[in-house]
Length: 295
Image 1: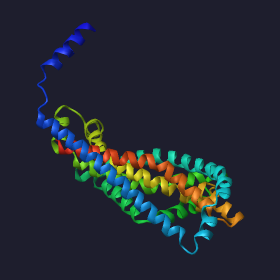
Image 2 (image 1 turned 60 degrees about the horizontal axis):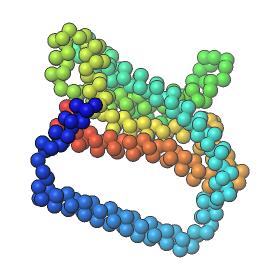
Image 3 (image 1 turned 180 degrees about the vertical axis):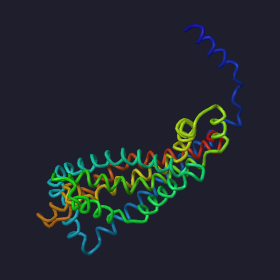
Image 4 (image 1 turned 60 degrees about the vertical axis):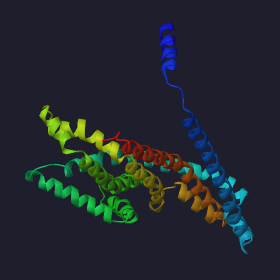
């Protein structure tokens, strides 16, 4: 402990003194930062006041406030919509796990080399083209109504399962293309170096290519995840009593639309941390690329 303290003190003494020019630059940066923060705060307050005045002075504001922003109906709908949101979150967890597996398989198939693998590449490309071009709502109806119509089982298939399958089929096509773009962005020398060390194609893909590819496309993957968070609310069209359906039930019973605002705020509150994390990750990756810290 004493040796490390002594070494730290010696290193601190060895550092050259900060020049007056550098001190002036630091003071300028602090002043500039403070001025920018103050201007941003004032402009935000001004815009917020203008928007508030526009809304309050609108002819139908009082009716709109009672219909969409009633505190009484807000508190009444809150626990019911929250119970429905838990169903959405369960479906989201199942869908994320399924998309991760299926999208990785599709991306791997599309990255196979050689003419012998053309049928696999063609099937993977046809799958991604089909589900990327089909609206998610139509996929929900086809899966939610078509699979039970096949009569494969006498048991009632849970709506959660049907909604999860529809999400997996749709979003695996998007995520697979993102992963494929990341795989193709890895320099070919990485593959050649791995193969020269004796790794197989699968080992090269798993140990060398995929880790680099995922790191490159993490912001895009996070955007797909955030989009999936929103689309999970569409499973209500199959009869699932999720957050959206609970809001619809409350609106039908009270003829007040505050429950929709409650559901929207819950989805925003759940996705906001991931949105901010995506923005931070994107900025961090751009900074690392500018200084040459990311290959």
